[in-house]
Amino acid sequence: MTARRLTRDALLTAVALILFTAEAQIPAPVPVPGVKLGLSNIVNAWAVCRIGAWDALAILLCRVFLGALFAGHMMVLFYSLSGGLLSLCALLILRRVTDESQLWICSVFAAIAHNAGQIAAAVLITRSLAVLAYFPFLVVSGAITGLFTGLCAQFLVSRRLS
Image (cartoon, rainbow, N blue to C red):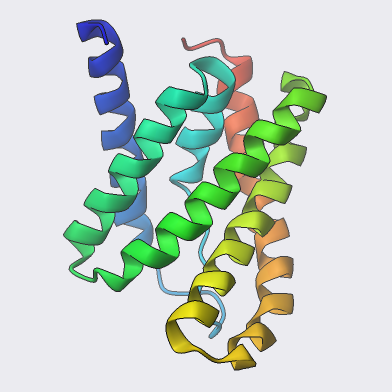
């Protein structure tokens, strides 16, 4: 890995962490656990389009680990990791069949995949299927927030910042 690539990935991780930390200060818009804007996913969507899958994965893993460490809740690690990895997989798969002008569509499905990963982690951790009751709310909120973050990422990609 070159120094330039490492520096770029570190800066993008820092931006994602700043967005993650700032978002944690925003009160939840609805009283459903797991509903968030997902602002740090803007960085990952941009990274998938501009710098590739491996760098996006590295940024995601660093952001998830450091975010859990900074938040002081290591349980966040399991939910963020499962959701983040599933979201990244969805982004990577959908990017193969779409072009850059459709990044916002990929982001909507990636957000829903993120919520599916979180619910799967919750089922495994709690050993209860009762948490599946949250999934319809998370799908709706994921579609809305995924649209917002996707449009933000779409704007950044169209700016040719890389």
